[in-house]
Picture 1 (cartoon, rainbow over the protein chains, first blue to last red):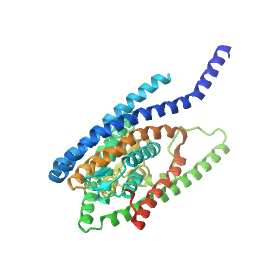
Picture 2 (cartoon, each protein chain N blue to C red; picture 1 turned 135 degrees about the vertical axis):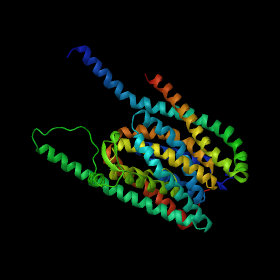
Picture 3 (spheres, rainbow over the protein chains, first blue to last red; picture 1 turned 135 degrees about the horizontal axis):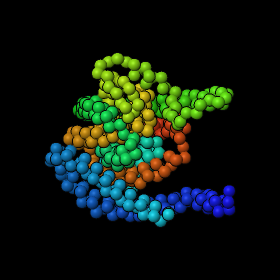
Picture 4 (cartoon, rainbow over the protein chains, first blue to last red; picture 1 turned 90 degrees about the vertical axis):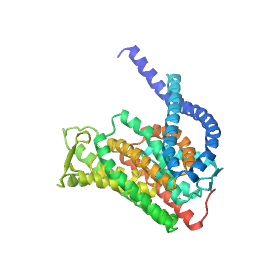
Length: 95
Length: 312
């Protein structure tokens, strides 16, 4: 085995050792960005929705039932998109 | 913060943290996490009928993105999933009707709480027994293999102490018989699939969540579906049971969608962390590590029932 391949193995091993630390630190950054986003979303969207949803629940349960599912699925899709974007950004930074 | 729909008063950060931990454990163990979310909501002072409906809504949101990931990896047997829908929907409705019955008789909190405890303890005991048996079996097989010189090496397979049950179910001749090529099953009675789906649906409609703690073992041990396909197909099923359960429970006034939305925000990031942790553990050891969680959920419900103390 030549010196070049030995060197590349050593490089791979050392980058392999660094990687979990890098992933953990990026996950922490991602968590912080995500928390800020969720806090803003929480106060802007959910607090506005509260009275409207309560009114629907009391007066039009059928409409409330139809709206509940798209609301949670819509939020899931939105937050998934945000976390994917953050992960992609993290992936680029880790390369 | 007041949640006017259910009348509960809960710290939103406690809800987000619950969603986060449910997401971590869900991502790690490949389950929805209703064994923790339900007891936690009850502990926060949410009435049991709302616990069931709200947890269903929360799980429906979670399963959409998780199922998409599994679909991308080819881990869903769509034929099996679609056949199961026919059993799941009547099951969810039966469970939801049972909740309405107990709500009318004003003992929904007690009945659901005791049913929850019974199911969670049974799941934990079964998982502990099965994982210990499987670990013993694996050790014995390894020893036998090392004694055989030149034994042929087989690829990675699911190891389970209960593999024989599925074989016995496959030979049950109850027409119509169908095949599931994706899951590697040549012949199985449609009725066994519908029965598994119906029972899972009843648990989902009556106790909330995706009932993965029932459907997953049933798919693996009773129908003999490979674990990775069982996880993906179960998540696909949860979209149906969770989606239908959300609508039917919301129509019956059992869903506080605001609680579900707040809790779900923590779950998204928790699920990622959980999935990252799975690379460290495999097979029966992961199932053994799962055992304390349903017991913790059962303990939380029992504590709330006995003391009447709600954190809210």
